[in-house]
Image (cartoon, rainbow, N blue to C red; front, side):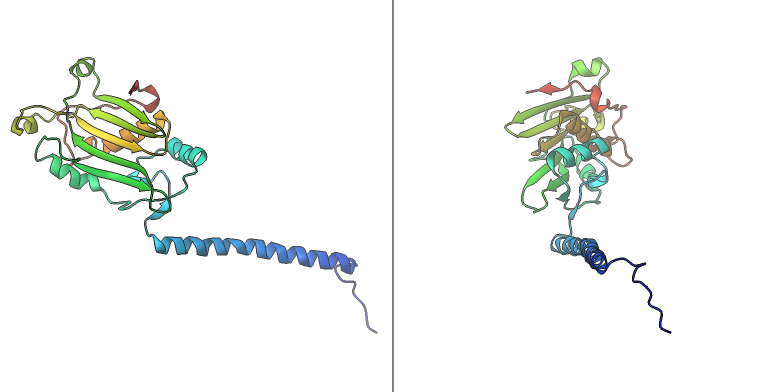
Length: 233
């Protein structure tokens, strides 16, 4: 005797067909991630410096709040970071430790970031001695940092002057003048002042707080980004 077993517990054939279509759609949709992955691999092969903007970018000068702002409000997800992971600050410090002079156009650029096409400059950081000394007034008041920002249309130029005292280098210089350590951020994205200050601070700390860098003879302290009084131009 032949026993007939109802398909899927007696589910009508029309429903079975619908379930099969749904299953096929689901598999296709899930398979889309493979396509996205392949597309990402192709982009990576075309530009090996293409990466996700993160707290690790440029050796950690972007904090969590800055990364979140850049992604949420400016749509920055993938960026091109030439030499990412390379500690350029060491090489730049070698030159700056030889003489206290304002190098032309700068002593070096520890970080530069382009958009995902690799054509548009988003951020660029430069460092230098001077061209002017640290404010005597700020020094007497106990400050060792001074922040300022200039805005031009949708672009910003933020600057940090650090009282990194190197009397030995000043003595060897032509003018015998102690210059401030200058960190400049060219922000073509238009981040908030708080984020620009944070980037400047973390960039400066890679030169003043780590061994075998600028070796400031005085103690340099940096305020929290939201505690900074900013000079605007």
